[in-house]
Length: 173
Image (cartoon, rainbow, N blue to C red):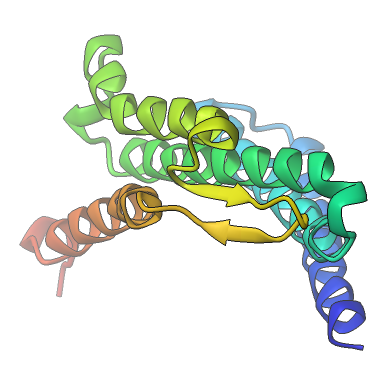
């Protein structure tokens, strides 16, 4: 029952994001911020879809062990990429110097690249997650690092927006 309700909620989120993405992509404005926001929507739709698959793969026992590993590897990779793309979108909207040049964007992408690599090798190393012989998912020893990087992008963008919102030229009376 819980898995079905969980899946329904995720499907509702996918439907709402799909509608937003459709409206955004059919609009005339296709500048960089709109493309980044489209990527945020698409990435989150993919994450919600994997979230629908996860309970199925995790409850399948040894027969679905491979799919459990695959779903988790892609899920962990997508969460890092989604957070980074949100950071890029937010910083682009704030006209931040952090994302104006390619060199700075590459520096900002380094934590995401580390998360991506560690997510993809975690099926062998167990650093972020592992799936035991019975096909059950477990968090790995470096799971907190993955969470810190993902939330780090979001917190950094939020704090930057908050700081800029306090400037007098951004808040006229």
